[in-house]
Amino acid sequence: MSAPVMNKISQISSARKLNKKQLDPCCFVLSAEGQDEILYFESLKKIIPRQFDKYYRLHVVKKTNVNHSAITHICRDLNEYIASGVSKFRKTKECSYVIFDHDSNFQANHIKNTLINIKECRQKNYITICSNPCFDLWLILHYIDITKTNDLEKILENKNNYVKQYLHRVRNNEDFSLLVRRYKVAIYNASKLVALCKDKAGSYPFACLKTEVVFLLEDIVDAGLLEC
Image (tube, rainbow, N blue to C red; front, side, top):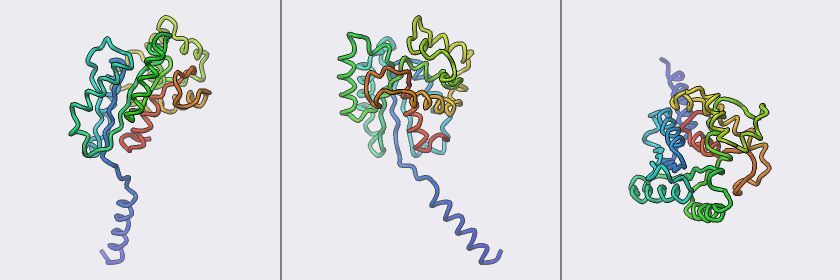
């Protein structure tokens, strides 16, 4: 092979190295309200390519009590998890998320305490991720664009666990390991709901039908751990 050709190949190789996305070592630490959230994110971990193992860790915090779903307990579990493994995060950029639902935390006698907890989360740089009415909305969006249906009001009201029943119909018992592979569809469909929401971003409680889980998935995608 002639020298000019070799030089050209060398230049192409160098350009690829320069254009390759540089990942800062990071940790995504997720503390959630329910078991379905834990199963979903544990399944999501399994589809992230192993080549990123040296750059990231996705930690899904196990619940100390499955019956405790209030944001107070979600934050406490996150605090304890981080405190118990400080060495895991010493050389990484840490992104911690508190994932909760609107319907079980924003009833009349819970609003004040919930907002206090949200404030404390933000003081610790925890990112709050809320779904209205519940996390099952995010799962539904893996299958359909609900903005094209007539079900928006019923889903938002969530009377008699309407959302869970709706999810059961569209999911048809598909395992989480398969469901999570539809994450690109969910991001697209959730973004359409966010665009329709007139509530100010980051304000709680928001009244519109929306799931902020899309922001967490976008963060994971932006880190280069999943394809966009």
